[in-house]
Length: 234
Image 1 (cartoon, rainbow, N blue to C red):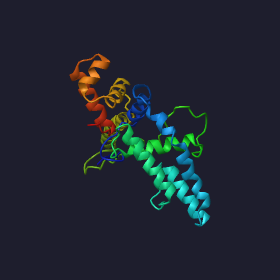
Image 2 (cartoon, rainbow, N blue to C red):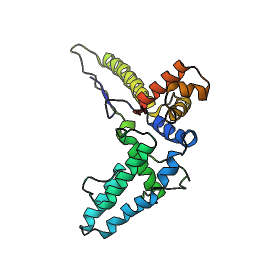
Image 3 (cartoon, rainbow, N blue to C red):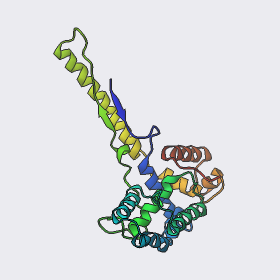
Image 4 (tube, rainbow, N blue to C red):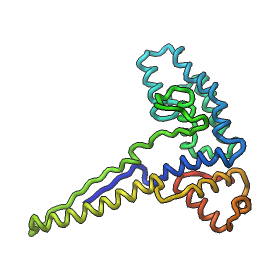
């Protein structure tokens, strides 16, 4: 029996998510990245409040580390600074018609603020209008397990042949899962069209802008949102 696991049951195109956020910078006005960076003072106020907590320093360090690891405010943090930051990010999402159910966008916003505020430990130059998302980890490192039970009358050579065949099958499935997660066979066109859809009301409006037939545009955007877990505005 062979088992390959890859995190959540729904396969997500993580590269597509990055491409979408990058596309919004050119296709949406105002650009979400620009209005997000306007929240840096609120973010810095939240980060600074840790220095004023009466909690044990170890507990404070754990809270900060969890926020950095998860790209989100920790559940125990009910400070007014945390509430202000949560409300600011929620308002930012609503402003750009991002669904409140798409928490991966909220996490991307938090992580991006974290990097631009200089509190993430990010190595290298920070791009002026750059998006920064946390590595999804397990989803991009699917587990593989090749088990080929022996049959009662099987020779070593026959068993090795079956094992090699099963290994090839598992390797092919492994590559397929990674390709789906990274969107290796996808282009930037769908991300751009989807970003444009957030600036208009209908697919027909998008077709006028990109000069393509509506059926092609609709199918491309629908497929893109399905594989990235993105909710279109109504």
